[in-house]
Image (cartoon, rainbow, N blue to C red; front, side):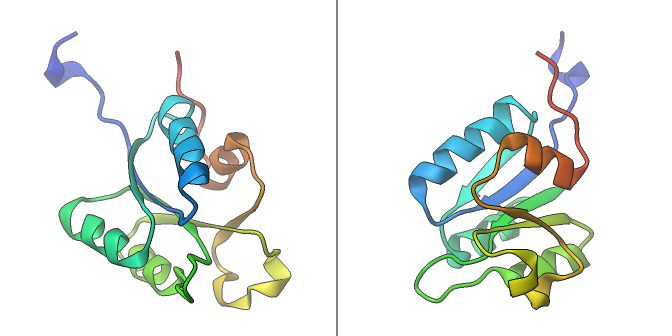
Length: 124
C-alpha cells in the first residue's frame, strides 16, 4: 500500500493529568480505536497542541489538578466543530456546566469512549 492510499487516521487530543492513566488510555485510543493521539497533561500543553494541530476529536479530563478545569477548552473546541467528550470521576448530575456534552465516568473502558464518540473499534 502506498503512502497516498493509506487512510488518514482521525486525530484526537487527549488531556489527562495522571500520566499512568494517560499512557494506558492513549494506547487504547491508538490501537483499539485507530486514533492518531496527541496527549497533554495540562491546559498550557493542550492549547499549544491545538495551535500546532487540527483535531477531529477531544477527550478531556474535567479536573486536571492545581485547580485547572478543561471546560473552557472543551467549549472552544466544540465551537470549532471538534467532537468533545469529557471524562470525570464525578457523575453528570454534579457537572451542570457540561450538560450538552457526552461524559464518560471514571473508571471507564475504551468501549465507553468509543460509544461516547460514536466510533467503531479499528480493524486489526
